[in-house]
Length: 335
Image (cartoon, rainbow, N blue to C red):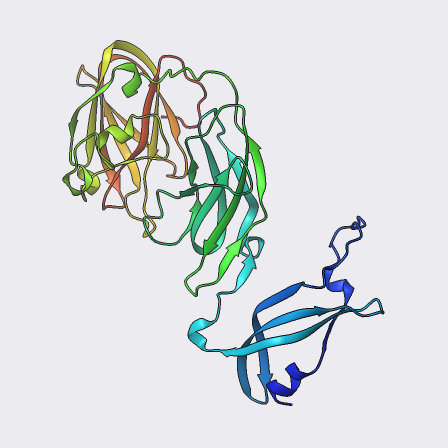
């Protein structure tokens, strides 16, 4: 049968197509006589030839319970005009579904692992119109498996809607249903002794990506600005990367916290590093991974902290954040 013969016949769409997948009973509705539908893609097998069709449908009122549409227009799509496949993110989620963690009054982190590399983003906002978008700093224009985009510029004690979406190398688009999370309330106390807000300054750095200044994007200040949505990146320093920070005054530091950046090609990951105090004492540490910040006991009085990369996966090594505390909020790693 030709495409024309198919579309010259009346199409019957059963009510089951409009049924919900839940056990609840939908409210009754009245269809307008002016209702029109546009179907952007119909895959049509004609003998051994696969064709792609679009169609416009008009609702036809009938005395029966059948919901009837007739085709008002249709056409054949060229392969270049075929829309991408839209699939559930659950099909490529490895283990736990995407979730929001590390929620504060001003930011939060979305985390999940995909079974295939995805160029992933999360849209979020105070309504289902969203309005903000976050991508993973570690993606750098590519596709990755471990996803940790930072949702920033949030308001305290506020309900937010978010949706995760990603694209694979074949052009398929994966998405998840919208979900919600709520930010914490109250004023945030910045206890980080290495914070710009607390008077810390960058006194030396191996380099900044593209030669930018410390206060520009990818500059060294991004490692002590209190935001996981920014990062300091060296300019291909690899194992030779270092950063030195001077505190506002000498303090007894109990804990140091380090969050390494990484890239989608597996470069830029810090594996081991040293911390040097103002006395010249050098302390070695191993970094378990680059998916989150890790804390290490320091227990030293010092007015400055210098981090030197000892071993890495090379490339544009750097830091999402480095912090120091007089009292440790928690310990996730040991020296």
